[in-house]
Image 1 (cartoon, helix red, strand yellow):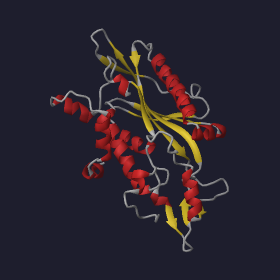
Image 2: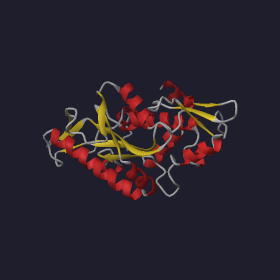
Image 3: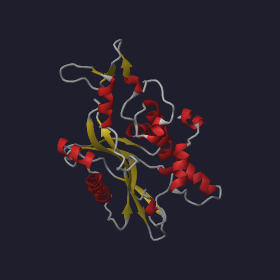
Image 4: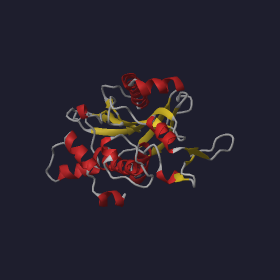
Length: 280
Protein backbone atom coordinates (compact mmCIF):
# COMPACT_ATOMS: atom_id res chain seq x y z
CA UNK A 1 0.00 0.00 0.00
CA UNK A 2 1.38 3.44 -0.88
CA UNK A 3 2.43 5.50 2.12
CA UNK A 4 0.14 8.38 1.26
CA UNK A 5 -3.05 6.54 0.35
CA UNK A 6 -5.75 4.52 2.04
CA UNK A 7 -9.15 3.61 0.67
CA UNK A 8 -10.64 3.43 4.16
CA UNK A 9 -11.38 -0.29 3.86
CA UNK A 10 -7.94 -1.63 4.78
CA UNK A 11 -8.01 -0.51 8.41
CA UNK A 12 -11.70 -1.19 8.87
CA UNK A 13 -11.19 -4.92 8.36
CA UNK A 14 -7.52 -5.36 9.28
CA UNK A 15 -5.64 -4.16 12.33
CA UNK A 16 -3.62 -0.98 12.21
CA UNK A 17 -1.52 -0.84 9.03
CA UNK A 18 -2.49 2.63 7.81
CA UNK A 19 -0.73 5.54 9.61
CA UNK A 20 -3.43 8.02 8.53
CA UNK A 21 -6.31 5.92 9.84
CA UNK A 22 -4.30 5.19 12.97
CA UNK A 23 -3.97 8.92 13.60
CA UNK A 24 -7.72 9.36 13.12
CA UNK A 25 -8.46 6.60 15.62
CA UNK A 26 -6.00 8.24 18.03
CA UNK A 27 -8.01 11.49 17.97
CA UNK A 28 -11.30 9.61 18.27
CA UNK A 29 -10.05 7.69 21.32
CA UNK A 30 -8.95 10.95 22.97
CA UNK A 31 -12.30 12.60 22.24
CA UNK A 32 -14.20 9.65 23.70
CA UNK A 33 -12.10 9.55 26.86
CA UNK A 34 -11.92 13.27 27.61
CA UNK A 35 -15.50 14.15 26.67
CA UNK A 36 -17.42 11.04 27.67
CA UNK A 37 -15.58 8.98 30.26
CA UNK A 38 -12.95 10.78 32.34
CA UNK A 39 -14.35 13.06 35.07
CA UNK A 40 -12.76 16.38 35.92
CA UNK A 41 -9.96 15.28 38.22
CA UNK A 42 -6.15 15.05 38.27
CA UNK A 43 -4.54 12.13 36.42
CA UNK A 44 -1.16 10.44 36.25
CA UNK A 45 0.29 8.30 33.46
CA UNK A 46 1.94 5.08 34.62
CA UNK A 47 4.09 3.27 32.05
CA UNK A 48 5.30 -0.28 32.63
CA UNK A 49 7.98 -1.83 30.43
CA UNK A 50 8.74 -5.54 30.79
CA UNK A 51 11.84 -7.69 30.08
CA UNK A 52 12.38 -9.10 26.59
CA UNK A 53 11.30 -12.59 27.60
CA UNK A 54 7.93 -11.32 28.83
CA UNK A 55 7.41 -9.23 25.69
CA UNK A 56 7.46 -12.34 23.51
CA UNK A 57 5.29 -14.23 26.01
CA UNK A 58 2.68 -11.45 26.18
CA UNK A 59 2.66 -11.06 22.38
CA UNK A 60 1.83 -14.74 21.87
CA UNK A 61 -0.32 -15.47 24.94
CA UNK A 62 -2.80 -12.66 25.63
CA UNK A 63 -4.40 -14.57 28.50
CA UNK A 64 -1.11 -14.41 30.41
CA UNK A 65 -0.74 -10.71 29.59
CA UNK A 66 -4.27 -10.06 30.87
CA UNK A 67 -3.51 -11.71 34.21
CA UNK A 68 -0.27 -9.75 34.53
CA UNK A 69 -2.08 -6.50 33.77
CA UNK A 70 -4.63 -7.29 36.47
CA UNK A 71 -1.84 -7.71 39.01
CA UNK A 72 -0.27 -4.42 37.95
CA UNK A 73 -3.58 -2.56 38.26
CA UNK A 74 -4.35 -3.97 41.71
CA UNK A 75 -0.85 -3.07 42.91
CA UNK A 76 -1.08 0.56 41.78
CA UNK A 77 -4.68 0.89 42.97
CA UNK A 78 -3.70 -0.41 46.41
CA UNK A 79 -0.84 2.10 46.52
CA UNK A 80 -3.32 4.90 45.76
CA UNK A 81 -5.78 3.80 48.42
CA UNK A 82 -3.14 3.40 51.13
CA UNK A 83 -1.48 6.71 50.20
CA UNK A 84 -4.83 8.39 50.78
CA UNK A 85 -5.12 6.76 54.20
CA UNK A 86 -8.15 4.72 53.12
CA UNK A 87 -9.14 1.11 52.52
CA UNK A 88 -10.65 -0.61 49.48
CA UNK A 89 -14.01 -0.57 51.27
CA UNK A 90 -14.07 3.22 51.58
CA UNK A 91 -12.14 4.47 48.54
CA UNK A 92 -12.04 3.66 44.85
CA UNK A 93 -9.89 4.64 41.91
CA UNK A 94 -9.91 3.87 38.21
CA UNK A 95 -7.68 3.64 35.15
CA UNK A 96 -7.69 3.50 31.38
CA UNK A 97 -5.06 1.12 29.99
CA UNK A 98 -3.67 1.05 26.47
CA UNK A 99 -1.58 -1.97 25.51
CA UNK A 100 1.11 -0.96 23.03
CA UNK A 101 3.04 -3.60 21.12
CA UNK A 102 5.67 -1.43 19.47
CA UNK A 103 8.81 0.50 20.30
CA UNK A 104 10.11 3.72 18.75
CA UNK A 105 12.21 1.69 16.28
CA UNK A 106 9.20 -0.40 15.15
CA UNK A 107 10.46 -3.28 17.27
CA UNK A 108 8.19 -5.64 19.20
CA UNK A 109 7.87 -4.08 22.65
CA UNK A 110 4.70 -4.98 24.54
CA UNK A 111 4.19 -2.47 27.33
CA UNK A 112 1.35 -0.83 29.25
CA UNK A 113 0.27 2.81 29.33
CA UNK A 114 -2.10 3.30 32.27
CA UNK A 115 -3.91 6.59 32.83
CA UNK A 116 -4.83 6.52 36.52
CA UNK A 117 -6.81 8.93 38.59
CA UNK A 118 -4.15 10.67 40.67
CA UNK A 119 -6.01 9.85 43.83
CA UNK A 120 -9.19 8.18 45.05
CA UNK A 121 -12.88 8.92 45.43
CA UNK A 122 -14.07 8.54 49.01
CA UNK A 123 -17.75 8.00 49.78
CA UNK A 124 -19.59 9.08 52.91
CA UNK A 125 -22.77 7.81 54.56
CA UNK A 126 -24.84 9.99 52.23
CA UNK A 127 -23.21 8.23 49.27
CA UNK A 128 -21.59 11.49 48.18
CA UNK A 129 -18.18 11.14 46.54
CA UNK A 130 -15.24 13.36 47.43
CA UNK A 131 -11.97 13.22 45.53
CA UNK A 132 -8.74 13.02 47.51
CA UNK A 133 -5.50 13.55 45.59
CA UNK A 134 -2.36 11.70 46.66
CA UNK A 135 1.30 12.65 46.46
CA UNK A 136 3.39 11.62 43.48
CA UNK A 137 5.26 8.33 43.96
CA UNK A 138 8.88 8.59 44.99
CA UNK A 139 11.75 6.94 43.17
CA UNK A 140 12.01 4.39 45.97
CA UNK A 141 8.37 3.41 45.44
CA UNK A 142 8.80 2.86 41.69
CA UNK A 143 10.18 -0.48 40.55
CA UNK A 144 12.44 -1.08 37.57
CA UNK A 145 10.60 -0.42 34.33
CA UNK A 146 7.80 1.54 35.99
CA UNK A 147 7.53 5.29 35.30
CA UNK A 148 5.01 7.83 36.58
CA UNK A 149 6.47 11.28 35.93
CA UNK A 150 3.68 12.71 33.72
CA UNK A 151 0.55 14.06 35.40
CA UNK A 152 -2.22 16.59 34.91
CA UNK A 153 -4.25 18.75 37.24
CA UNK A 154 -8.03 19.08 37.18
CA UNK A 155 -8.08 22.21 35.02
CA UNK A 156 -5.56 20.87 32.46
CA UNK A 157 -8.03 19.16 30.12
CA UNK A 158 -6.02 20.06 27.00
CA UNK A 159 -2.96 18.41 28.51
CA UNK A 160 -5.12 15.40 29.37
CA UNK A 161 -6.25 15.25 25.74
CA UNK A 162 -2.61 15.30 24.61
CA UNK A 163 -1.74 12.44 26.97
CA UNK A 164 -4.71 10.43 25.70
CA UNK A 165 -3.49 10.95 22.14
CA UNK A 166 0.01 9.89 23.11
CA UNK A 167 -1.04 6.62 24.72
CA UNK A 168 -3.43 5.87 21.82
CA UNK A 169 -0.96 6.76 19.06
CA UNK A 170 -0.45 4.42 16.09
CA UNK A 171 2.67 2.32 15.72
CA UNK A 172 3.96 4.19 12.68
CA UNK A 173 3.88 8.01 12.67
CA UNK A 174 3.44 9.05 9.05
CA UNK A 175 5.65 12.20 9.23
CA UNK A 176 8.69 10.00 9.98
CA UNK A 177 8.22 7.89 6.85
CA UNK A 178 9.60 8.75 3.42
CA UNK A 179 10.62 7.02 0.19
CA UNK A 180 14.14 6.89 -1.17
CA UNK A 181 14.91 7.27 -4.87
CA UNK A 182 15.41 3.51 -5.11
CA UNK A 183 11.91 2.84 -3.76
CA UNK A 184 12.89 1.77 -0.27
CA UNK A 185 11.31 3.18 2.88
CA UNK A 186 13.27 5.53 5.12
CA UNK A 187 12.13 5.59 8.75
CA UNK A 188 13.36 8.33 11.08
CA UNK A 189 14.12 7.08 14.58
CA UNK A 190 12.60 8.97 17.49
CA UNK A 191 15.83 8.53 19.44
CA UNK A 192 19.15 7.95 17.62
CA UNK A 193 21.02 4.74 18.31
CA UNK A 194 24.17 4.86 20.42
CA UNK A 195 26.28 4.75 17.25
CA UNK A 196 24.58 7.89 15.96
CA UNK A 197 22.15 6.21 13.53
CA UNK A 198 19.15 8.47 12.92
CA UNK A 199 17.33 6.61 10.09
CA UNK A 200 16.65 3.00 9.14
CA UNK A 201 16.13 1.87 5.55
CA UNK A 202 13.59 -0.90 4.85
CA UNK A 203 12.69 -2.81 1.75
CA UNK A 204 8.87 -2.39 1.46
CA UNK A 205 8.32 -6.11 2.05
CA UNK A 206 10.65 -6.09 5.06
CA UNK A 207 8.73 -3.14 6.47
CA UNK A 208 5.46 -5.06 6.18
CA UNK A 209 7.03 -8.01 7.99
CA UNK A 210 8.28 -5.65 10.70
CA UNK A 211 4.85 -4.09 11.07
CA UNK A 212 3.17 -7.47 11.43
CA UNK A 213 4.88 -7.95 14.79
CA UNK A 214 3.12 -4.76 16.02
CA UNK A 215 -0.37 -6.00 15.16
CA UNK A 216 -2.39 -8.20 17.49
CA UNK A 217 -3.46 -11.51 16.03
CA UNK A 218 -7.07 -12.11 14.99
CA UNK A 219 -7.55 -14.40 18.01
CA UNK A 220 -6.71 -11.57 20.42
CA UNK A 221 -8.94 -8.77 21.62
CA UNK A 222 -9.65 -6.30 18.85
CA UNK A 223 -9.68 -3.49 21.42
CA UNK A 224 -6.28 -2.17 22.42
CA UNK A 225 -7.48 -0.50 25.60
CA UNK A 226 -9.67 -1.19 28.59
CA UNK A 227 -11.40 0.56 31.49
CA UNK A 228 -10.51 -0.77 34.91
CA UNK A 229 -11.76 -0.27 38.43
CA UNK A 230 -14.50 2.31 38.90
CA UNK A 231 -14.28 3.24 35.21
CA UNK A 232 -15.34 -0.26 34.17
CA UNK A 233 -18.81 -0.99 32.83
CA UNK A 234 -19.55 -3.26 35.80
CA UNK A 235 -19.07 -0.38 38.22
CA UNK A 236 -21.39 2.11 36.53
CA UNK A 237 -24.53 0.85 38.26
CA UNK A 238 -22.89 0.45 41.66
CA UNK A 239 -22.77 2.90 44.53
CA UNK A 240 -19.11 3.73 43.93
CA UNK A 241 -19.58 4.68 40.26
CA UNK A 242 -17.43 7.71 39.48
CA UNK A 243 -18.61 10.95 37.87
CA UNK A 244 -18.51 10.80 34.10
CA UNK A 245 -17.05 13.10 31.45
CA UNK A 246 -18.28 16.59 30.69
CA UNK A 247 -20.50 15.72 27.71
CA UNK A 248 -22.10 12.84 29.61
CA UNK A 249 -22.86 15.17 32.52
CA UNK A 250 -24.41 17.68 30.13
CA UNK A 251 -26.69 15.03 28.64
CA UNK A 252 -27.75 13.96 32.15
CA UNK A 253 -28.50 17.58 33.08
CA UNK A 254 -30.72 17.79 30.01
CA UNK A 255 -32.92 14.98 31.29
CA UNK A 256 -31.28 11.93 29.71
CA UNK A 257 -30.02 10.07 32.77
CA UNK A 258 -29.50 6.76 31.03
CA UNK A 259 -25.88 5.68 30.79
CA UNK A 260 -24.72 5.20 27.18
CA UNK A 261 -24.57 1.58 26.11
CA UNK A 262 -21.37 -0.06 24.95
CA UNK A 263 -22.72 -0.19 21.40
CA UNK A 264 -23.65 3.48 21.58
CA UNK A 265 -20.15 4.46 22.73
CA UNK A 266 -18.60 2.41 19.93
CA UNK A 267 -20.86 4.07 17.36
CA UNK A 268 -19.96 7.58 18.58
CA UNK A 269 -16.28 6.71 18.47
CA UNK A 270 -16.54 5.09 15.04
CA UNK A 271 -18.49 7.99 13.57
CA UNK A 272 -16.87 10.83 15.47
CA UNK A 273 -17.83 13.92 13.48
CA UNK A 274 -15.01 15.39 11.42
CA UNK A 275 -15.63 18.92 12.73
CA UNK A 276 -15.25 17.62 16.28
CA UNK A 277 -11.93 16.02 15.34
CA UNK A 278 -10.56 19.16 13.65
CA UNK A 279 -11.48 21.30 16.67
CA UNK A 280 -9.18 19.12 18.78
